[in-house]
Figure 1 (cartoon, rainbow, N blue to C red):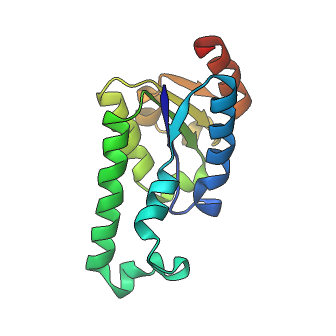
Figure 2: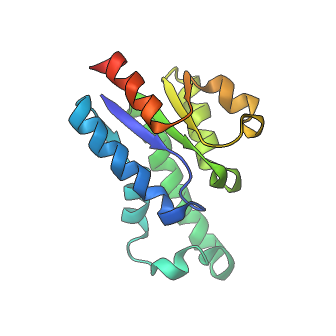
Length: 153
């Protein structure tokens, strides 16, 4: 099975790479699942651009920036719809400054993919839309892991 690892990138610490590396290794070794990691897909698309100036392109070269981001959007949506069996979502405070995670969850819900959301914000800050799209909501990655072992091992 393949998990799509959804969560903030653009405004997240280290582009949200750390938790994705950790859960990728855990899934592989504990339930035998692989992942689609959108951080890696984004890095592949933006590798020809200096990392310190890529995000600044929205001001310096908005049309080129839009083209790059649309490539990322297309790859991510295709992965959610056609290349993954379920989503693992890291819902943390930097998600509020982006839009991709919201869209990925909505697409997965529409295509009836299970959505396992690890909520790291106060429950009052979790939108009813996101909550209701989610198949299961967990308070920690440890809770998610316990669930995954029971469901998929």
